Picture (cartoon, rainbow, N blue to C red):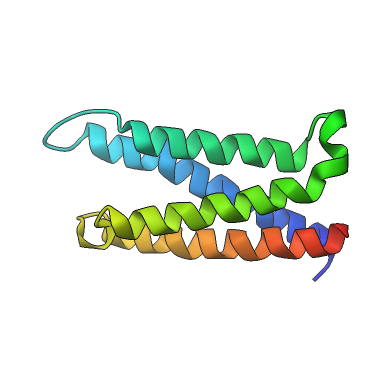
Length: 120
């Protein structure tokens, strides 16, 4: 897999997860029985967006630590997967969306790992 393909995969999987957490899940929460914006989904989506920005366009002083961003993305995705199971995600009405997003996050972790290896 070329470096360009790895980078594109990393960007697309992170964008998908960001959109699901920031927009889709909040839309579902707003249209449910108890309309609200879910702060955990919002913060999770913002975290993914910030890490994606750091992975794609890091500030000059962080160029030395480019692989750190990849490791942070892997850790963040792993923590999100664990949280999905801890907060009874599989039993909720949005379970299929949750499983699709978890699969995407596993792919994100793979692309981040691959990107780390290619940058070394």
